[in-house]
Amino acid sequence: MGVCNWYSQFVDNYTDIIAPLSNLLKQGVRWRWTITEQRAFENIKRALYSSPKLSPPDYSAPFCLQTDASEIGVGAILFQRGDSPEDRRIVSYASKKFSDTQKRYSAVERECLAIIWATDKFRPYLETRRFELLTDNAALTWLHRAKDKNSKLTRWSLQLANLDFSTVHVPGRLNEAPDLLSRDPAPGEPVDEDSLEDKLVGVPITHTNHGPKTDNLFSTFAANDKNAPITTDILAAWQSEDSATAEIIQHITADTPARNTRSSKTGIDTYVFSDGLLRINTGHDSLVVIPKSKSQHIIWRYHDHLLASHPGWKETYRAVRQRFYWKGQKNDVRLYVGACHVCACTKPLNTRPDGPMRARTPKQPWEVISIDLMGPYPRTHRGKAYILVATDCFSRWTEAYPLGTATTKTITETLEREFFSRFGYPRVCLSDNGPQFVSTEMKSTLDSWGTEGWTTPVYHPRVNPVERRNQELKKGLRAQLVNGKHSSWDTKLAPILFAIRNRRNEQTGYTPATLVLGRECRRPGDWALSSSSHVLVDLHEKDRSAREQRVLGDKPTAGGSNDSKFCEGDVVYYKSHHLSKAHDGFHAGFAPKWWGPVALAKRVGKGVFLTDQSPARKLHVSCLKRAKDKLG
Image (tube, rainbow, N blue to C red; front, top):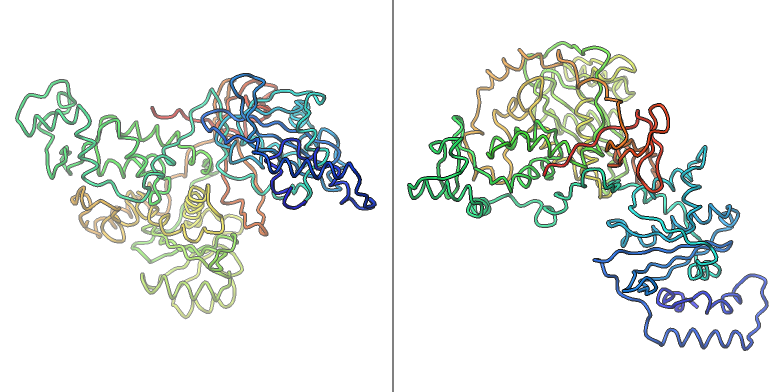
């Protein structure tokens, strides 16, 4: 029976053929080998000897999934349509028995569970494309309209929300093939609902005909070579293949007139051809000219790349304009970042605080540091579960150290070994009121360092500058763990810290690297592009300028409240809600914050809309934010 069950997906009507033999394995059934059992034995051998009746999947054609549930179990068939509607090319059969608890579900709940189980079973075929679901439509209608949904129904709804499918109603009397599979399912463990729910979180993409297309630049470029720098040979090839840049190069090298090019507006004298590349002089630097058709590739390198970690549009634009030039660069970057799907799903909305935050301003780097603990997170392979974050309040330079335990001893030893050995001991150490930071041992250690210990007001952590760095770390981890294992978070900190140190701070006016090192940290390939934008600066001048800008926050934080005026047809993202599961290594803090994009199909109440999904979802405007149009 074990061998037969292993090959059950290759046998049409397997459960019907094997039913007499399966019945002998049931508890309380007497062993009787009659002509019926012998015939079933011969039939199953014949079916296994014959050529399989399955067809290889054709990934250029749509898939169809047909499901059904009985009192005993679930059955499903994955197939593709042939030349005629009646012609079916079977890809796979599947069936599973119910547990004793699941057998007590109502008929419509069993039908819903059949859909959930089948879509998970065949998820590799279905999750990246639109497919057709053939089932009893009443199940999906009930799941959508059920009032006072419990956690089980909510999780089922969330799992289906990640899939793009159309529904075809199949009455029970016509749903014969899956019905046969469900009424005598393959022996084995019953349907494991917990394992289905563990797979709910990924990049939650809901396809819609009304919204912007999902950003596929990351997967396209990453599949080619996500870590290799853009070489001068690649840039030269881009310029030679573009008619506009090629004509400017020809004019400069051959001294011939340029026609209908950017030079007529920009000025041909501003262009130079140096080291095999066309560049433009900006007065401060010589930037590589990029063809308009390659602009999104460049933006991807400084926004989606591992060492960029999805910064905001201003920081992305600053990084791009230091190295490259094309017409309309600023607007292109703003539109690209605004339509980034990873950012839309992982970054929270920043709202204006009740009042401005003010604090005493340090006069030099490493005078005042701010520390905090993040976690616990899923324990990594190296045994780490917490992050100790330390930020210099003057320059905003940030360090993050994975810790195995969150004790005062571990914190102080890490600071002495890793932080103070590089940057020196501070005058002031600012922290919240966590037990590790207000303990007697911490006070004694601070005294031995000659350092003052400051703490923030209870339940008011936002006055601690390190909290902002915590948000940036979390955003970076969410972006880098979108499709990865949450237990690998400690391997992602280094590139995220690289990105944070190279981002210009709105309040200081400089990047942390500039205030600490006198220059920005170089990216792969920067040496071949330019050197003048990375020269050492006068740190004393930078220190004075940073102090004048009130480093610790005279400016208010991010903008005002979210616009709550939505209309039918608007394309939006909606908030996602997750619970951490320590035993499964899943942390809600690393999960996407938003799902979508979806279109608002109909207003059904004050501030309440139905989406254009199938099934539709009812959403309140407080849970929505607008989706921005995709560049190009």
